Image (tube, rainbow, N blue to C red; front, side, top):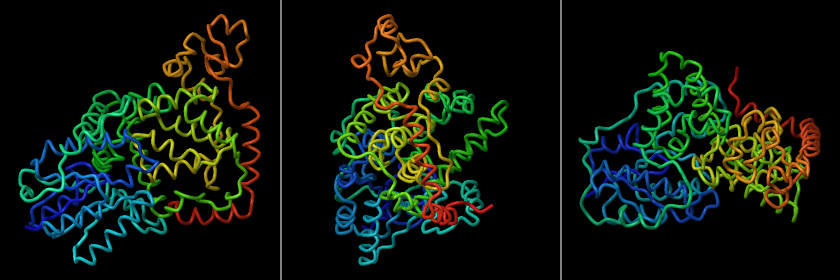
Length: 483
């Protein structure tokens, strides 16, 4: 018996799922497939927290379909497809385009070649409003609006002709023990969870969104918290955008909904940049920065380790990193500050820290991650140069030091604003507040005033270089929407 095979990747849901709808319309029995691929399990961008989230998402799907209609295995996608085709004949392969890393792109090219050899039609659907192969942004905004406002592709699951017989290559219960829960406190995955979190946002949690999104403490509740669900496809961007439109007339919510909807638009914009120039995974998008001087050798490794472990001696930086290690989430402003501190104050190449933060971000989305990392590192040549002062960020965004004290208990008795610069404490004050710098909490790894000045002079000097300016014009032409 031939099957219509739906290959799940970063689209772990059953609603607004065009590949599933296409498979149902084919008339063939429908089979769902997810592969825990060894190349991704070993990839430095991922960690157990991601695979736990995927497992929870698959468990949510399994609860809504016949037991034998979802196959899950731990082997390469191509090997799995070959095995299914040999046993059952794949009548058609259906999936979303994956805007992923270089390894998934190479995998997809190999799968496409195999499908051509076997005469299998592989129908790929767009991921959101991201357009494959796009070279310029003419009319991109109109297409985005058209996509986001179109009818969601949601099948009637009760009418699906599920594939439920024949030899299985693996099911969810066979692999569940392989991905035990990692230590930490992370958002649970799944389409049902995504809808619950979104509903709670509109029920009141998100009313202060526009005022709280920059606070590392308040954003934990006031932000939508949909990023992980969007990254792994537990809900589509279109579903979230249409939920905004459905709540547009809520009294007292306009400012929040305007801010929230703008970030949904921003989501596709940065993924589109990565899709159009995926080489940015490996190099500066602006090649004029290739020779930008960076700290190297043992000193670079010492600085990187301090940053990765939250032991730089700069409280807001360390608190954010420890929060990420434990929860997988921090708000956008603090993410930008972490990258800025790495690249500007510590003078490290952005590539030194890009995989580390990917491993920590539960919502790691390759397109957004690489586009944003380079923008905050100041190596695009087109964006405003932002060198965050972490002390100022702490004093403004965590004025009472509550967030810092939550994640750095050694500083819990130090009053604001001193909690954001404990190196300013005199020996007598250290004794008074029960802390010894260098023992209970590290001395600062750099002098912020000196590192800020050096970074500012360096970046503005390079911004004026002819090659940087030339590359900036190319980038603007390719990635920026025309007025």
